[in-house]
Image 1 (cartoon, rainbow, N blue to C red):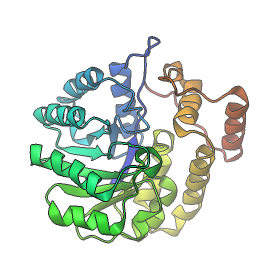
Image 2: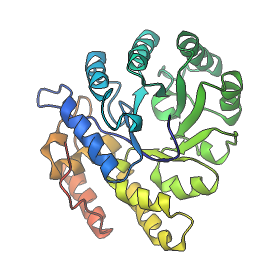
Image 3: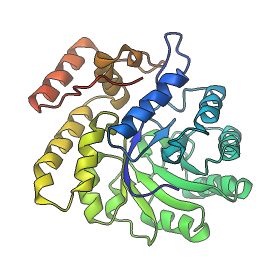
Image 4: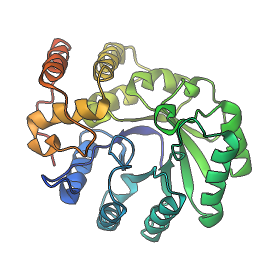
Amino acid sequence: MIKKGVYAAKLSVLKDDLSLDIEATISHAEWIIKEGCHGVFFFGSTGAGQYISSSEKKELISQISSHKLKNQFFLGIGNNSLKENLDLIRYGMEYKFDTFLLMPPAYGKGNTEEGVYNFYKNIIIKQPKIKIILYNFEKLSSFLFTPEFVKKLVSDWPKNIIGIKDSSSNLYEKLKIPNFLIFPGSEAKLVKGLKLGCAGCISAVTNVTHSMARTVFDNYTSDSSESLNKKLILVRETFDNYNLISALHSYMSIKNENYKNLLPPLILLNSKDKKELLKKLETLKFNLNKKIAA
């Protein structure tokens, strides 16, 4: 069961033939948790979950099912096929994973509240014990959750809809539901969210800001964390100037070449943007001094 905390929407590590490097992806998850995150999500948008094959996902799920950190491992499900989503959820639940970050299928600008409601309804009817964290990411799913719609979902399935990751429209500022976990999708919103009663954050950039974000989370009520939080926000905003997946892989590949591979159409930053990113981070005195595990 997921709890309050700082979570990473983790990157997927690929081999040179662009197949999923399962051992390296698990090693990276271990490293992120060791460095401060309360847990990680595999196969979210940052992990290129929509591009990785179901067979590769199943192989990783089976391998982490007996891992000592299993209770800190969570699964993202974001396929466009309802059948594939159900198949992966069924497979995950067979291995005792019950909490899933679940984004509505993308369909241009055609997604409606009725359609998205029916999507979650189909999932819950087939898997009545599932725990769902909604994923509000309009840029990818072409659907924007509203406070009223989230409340309806929670009202109809209070045992199943347990939280939301908000990566669009600052929904986390407006949403108030008792015993419901709200995670802003950026560590730049971590402290503000915590002060509003949010549970923490689920972020792409905590792949690299893990230690800083955890320190801010643990000490957010203290005046001493204010300057560190300002730096955390600036680092996040620096990465936000670029495609996040491209920027994170480009940055992390400096320390470990395993991160240089991306599934098309994703690409690394060009040399100009990479140089610019590194210069900005150097100005902020942000640097991963340790070798990145993978």
